[in-house]
Amino acid sequence: MNPRPLHGRLATLAATVVLGACALPGVPPADAPVSDEVLASPSSAGKRLRPMPWRPLDVRADCRFRDEAGYVTRITLDVLQSKVRTFNADVDIPRRGSCRFDGPFTQTREKPSIQLRAADGCQVNIWEQGKAVTVGFANCAARCSRGAFDYLWPIIIDRSSGQCH
Image (cartoon, rainbow, N blue to C red; front, side, top):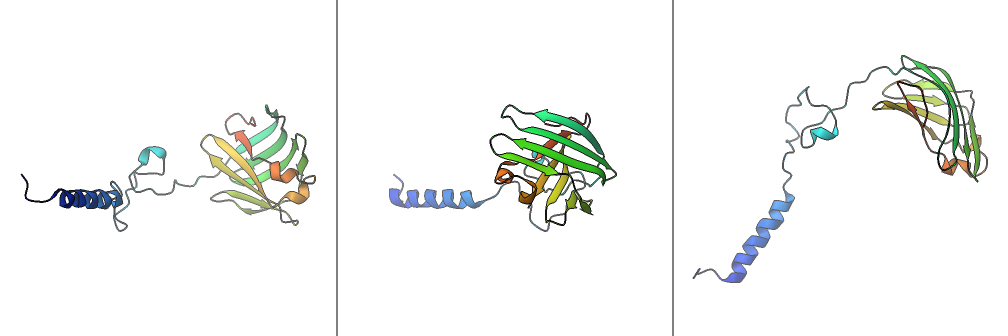
């Protein structure tokens, strides 16, 4: 029989489990060198991540879309080399009202994402997400009928086809 009492072995086992739970396997120390081959992606879990390189955004869309919930979106967007040449959008939100984004907007940023601002404080943010371009809105309640802005979703555009979803 082991001369150590059972409670001593259980205490040792518990301490080992607790300390083991604190370990972070696969995470390099903060001062480890960053490899240029590793980009931020879901398949790079456990590796040191770095931002993906920026590239200018090019997208054209002139589309109308109605989803299964009844949202109707109309958008015209023309961006060349991250410079917005045309933007306007209308969104009808079922039982809530509508929002109109027909300018005037001033482009205040082109990287890492595009930002448009209006004198009323409305901000339109445009960014690339895989094969899609997302158009999101912030502080734009004045451009919507009462309460509709709370139900406004971002507009998704397929970059290659120009179709909106």
